[in-house]
View 1 (cartoon, rainbow, N blue to C red):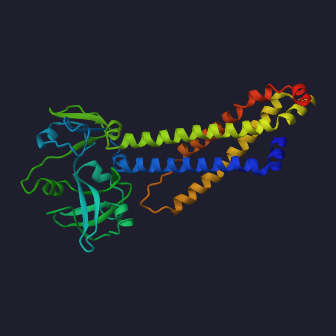
View 2 (view 1 turned 90 degrees about the vertical axis):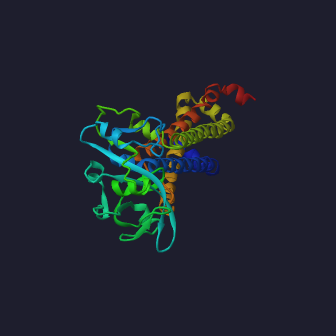
View 3 (view 1 turned 180 degrees about the vertical axis):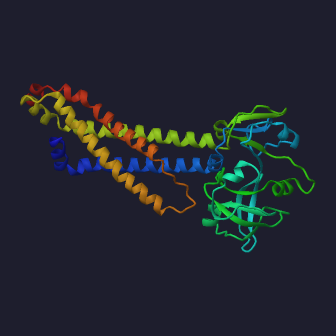
Length: 355
């Protein structure tokens, strides 16, 4: 370790360049990881707050909440215990009646006697109690400048709804969720013809009786079927994997070049009786020092970036995921340092010094 640090101090520029490359790659990986986690969370936040195990959809909906419609008869025939909740869903552009601004949102009608309503985490205001009252996701307040008591519409021919409460962590498909009374949302979605159709039933229990024309999915399977969810996660995952491999090759190339330049130095050390294992430890320790410092600096830069990012950019930090990524970066650096070891072990002092 002493020799490693002394050599790095002597060749600051060379090792500084390697460290800079590690910092930049680690910074990019951390930012991508935070963005991937943030986007993933924005797709499923509302679903996670339901704490459900299963969801019942129309059998022809292909696992999509947007395409699912359950008749009142199908809903009443489905038995899933006490911890179940009906959901009536539609996508709409919410309009600020004062400014005229429009924001895409997911509208969810829920029953006031069922558990999703009971579990709503209100951070401002109150739960809806009367007709044409809604609870909105916090992002509509913070990012889109809506406020409590404001009247909004949800598309053409929409009645006026009043914001009475604010909840947090309620996004679905990256859009803010607006919770309203089941009857109000049904009347808006299907018109005033008293249609009682819903979109889905979520439950914390197993479904004991499934109506004809319906299907039950586990919540995890349902999340995987969210539009673009799996493709987005896979894209980010492969990008991070390729960046880790790039880190491996860059460090291996840098250290190989440095090793080739130090062959005469290693030959002299071998003549003095220094073992190959000591030389190998020296190179590996350099890789560990560079990668740990690089990861620490890039982690700090990532935190600064997250603070400076606008609220509309979803960056979420998962401590376990970030720590795992950091360890992988250090591991890639160690593997990269091991690659040129064969050159060190095969150095013949007599050949090198003798020319």
